[in-house]
Length: 416
Image (tube, rainbow, N blue to C red; front, side, top):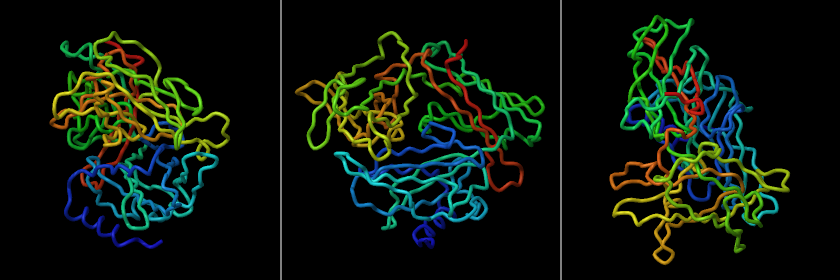
């Protein structure tokens, strides 16, 4: 399919006028269960080694069997448009129709399941490391949604250690990420200017820490050991439920009702901020599609209406509470906002989710728009969290930011 004019003008507009950071576009309500990962990953934020496979899947619940198209764009470290042209970072063509889709089978909720794999016959590979966005478009030239991903090369080693906060005021509530970058293949020129870093907690780009400078340089070893700059609120273990059998109450589900589709009513949750920390295993905000007695869960798992309920004092004017997790890319949308029900005395909301195992928590957005993840769940230094560190390098005279290294650590091994 030829490049659409609208896509061309958008690219031209970004290239010549806009220098602001690009943001992901959240999908409309009829697009659900976006799973986005690499061939070796289970996370919903693909961080791929150059040459690895990228997989994107999603469901369209409108029953129209629409055509969708994908566009891939390269970006700088700070998510401003890259100066590279398409042929420099992509082998083959994008702006192609997603050909692989199937309709749901034996489900109350009708949907079409779309699947995209890169490389494929049209898009044969990604040539450059760095930041990318894949955007999905429909036949009306409307962007349906977009997702960020990263491609890296193993040019440096990144050692990651998780420590308790070094600030005594937050030692019970925060975790600090220490890391060291070393290499024998790159001679860093002026690393204070050419090296940039990104730290991500639990695959959530909304809370990522960016653009830290190395504190110490020992030859080709860069050391980052900050007191407060690399500290994250530790949060709490995610709540969870599983409804792999829609007809019976399962883990976290109190009871089930059948209407136009099955409705699953979760147990009422309450604040954990002032309770002692209790460990229970979670998957750090992620989700997994599961269904009993189904051969292909991609098209045989059904959608159910999940009812959330939170016992919490009425919020002051301007504050809002949301169900939060990677099931919708940590988005704060009207659909997952809880509304206070004066009759029940609970905050409540309900929306469609595909059968599976889900992590979630409740968060508060303040009047000024700031996110408070720990207001309801609490923050405990013992919480198990995953951290990823990405290292970018733009040598003097280079045209784009290379992503030269990737390291990962878990607070399971946290130390003082």
